[in-house]
Length: 174
Image 1 (cartoon, rainbow, N blue to C red):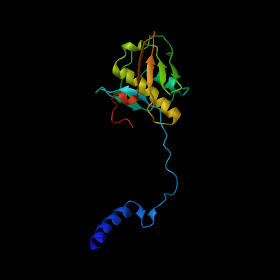
Image 2: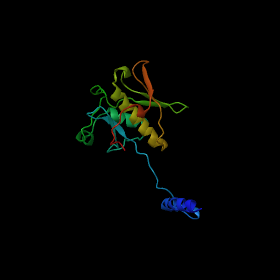
Image 3: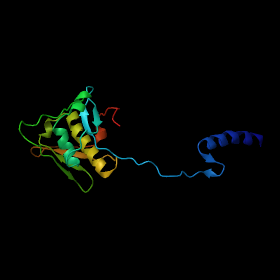
Image 4: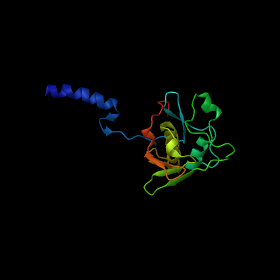
């Protein structure tokens, strides 16, 4: 009997330290803090990773296609100052706003239609588009669930589907 009492004391102390009192689990007052999902653009780092950055300026028409279109139009000063860059090919001179379409399947997969031959994109360029599209869609849905993203472009060529977690991301990405 004495051995049982000796073992019960450490257990009682452990449970009381975790918020479990003699009367059981205590209810927590209030509601948990709200978590918002912010859309990010993904840029390449010198060590071949991707880093998500909340754009300094939201696209004129927030949405998945606009987030990708904004990524394709290039760097801004804050991104350059952070030593980030793009692996996407430059857009043709005088081409205006690039055409980007995003189609969602009933199963939730996104297809991003780019103004490039997607076969020519390297792994990090593909990751920039996939992760930016995923992030914008995650913000729209208010969910961090991974979404499969397929890329198409000039012609009938396609790549994917991929998920953002298929690509190396920088540990600094929140």
